[in-house]
Length: 216
Picture 1 (tube, rainbow, N blue to C red):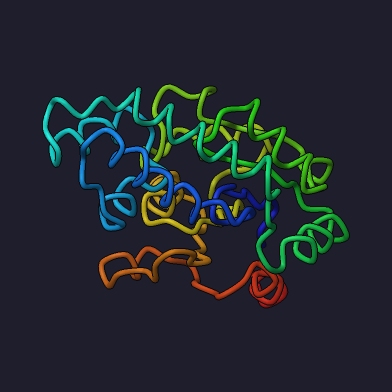
Picture 2: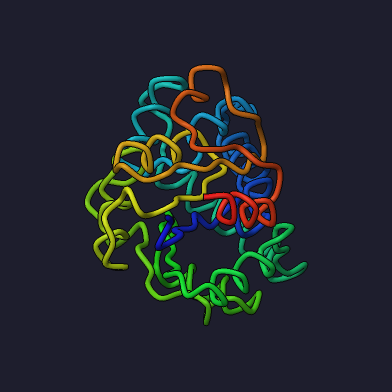
């Protein structure tokens, strides 16, 4: 039986992945690079050590990753300040169910701790979580398993007793490599065929995870 559930954040709990895509493309184009959605999808949940060489491999060494990312963050922050943050469907129901069934709840996100805390407090779910492992707290980000292995240590259960919820292929690979039950709730894209064999399940909303847990 699953003893702990570990959540990604952007695109999984918060409907922010569409904003990251929009503003990655806008920022890159402001700097003269024709970034398209396919390029953004390829770096979802990737830490900078992986995303930077990937993008420079596409656009060349002149692609200033740090500068373009900083502008993307600025544009995203301005949008969120103006319009707020949308929660993904079923988040509240799932978190409440996990509390009622006394399961540990953790976050494993590529986002830094300061913004993670700010966003989750803003949407009123921060108090549900027992522990947080953020991008600035690990050496290697997703798809490396370090972030999920750390989260499992934090909740006190082996990966085999932990379920990881992700919306991106890189996040799924990270969770699976750590030995977690990798469940995908797709956001910007459906899982490709090569990803399906490593999925514990794939469901349309976070609320559907409740039935997976009840069926174990």
